[in-house]
Length: 205
Image 1 (spheres, rainbow, N blue to C red):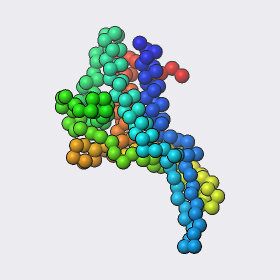
Image 2 (cartoon, rainbow, N blue to C red):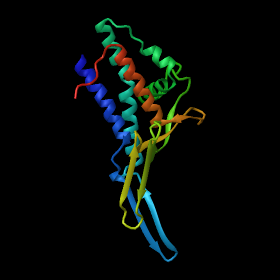
Image 3 (cartoon, rainbow, N blue to C red):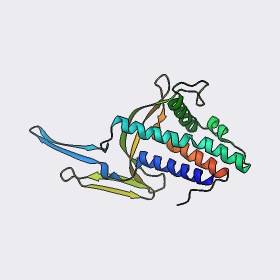
Image 4 (tube, rainbow, N blue to C red):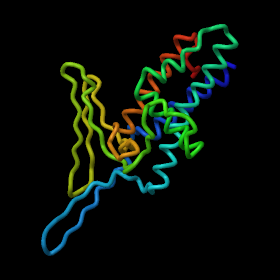
């Protein structure tokens, strides 16, 4: 049982790594000169298509949401109290990911969604995200030479620069419920806490 859970947690982290990438080599600096002037544009897509982005998003949602069933089996076999349903009911991000997964599997839900919405993902794209990490004195920056295409990243005290696949999670009325990547990060962290509280050891290297 622990081998399966170990693999599932690693799969979730790898799926997060596909969505949040710290390797910036995919950024293309596109330089063009015309009679009107010099133009420079940054392309973060790495050549990903809309379908490719959706495949990555669907994989992350599935890898997070399926932890519920694995935790339930773990608790049954180890005599622990299963609190996965309480987590879904109390955490908006966990509930949204759970509903996204159920809708992807079943197309239509035969019961009320746990989040109170029928969420879907729209406008997926890959962007650059600069974060200070929230620590005093933390810093992050990205610079590039428009003539050579050379790139520089500078981070301090937990700052980060990453490429993130994200979009909007919206309800059935097209009202934005949140940012896809942020929702998934929060839901993944919540499930990992639940696993640890149930006595599931961290994945082995």
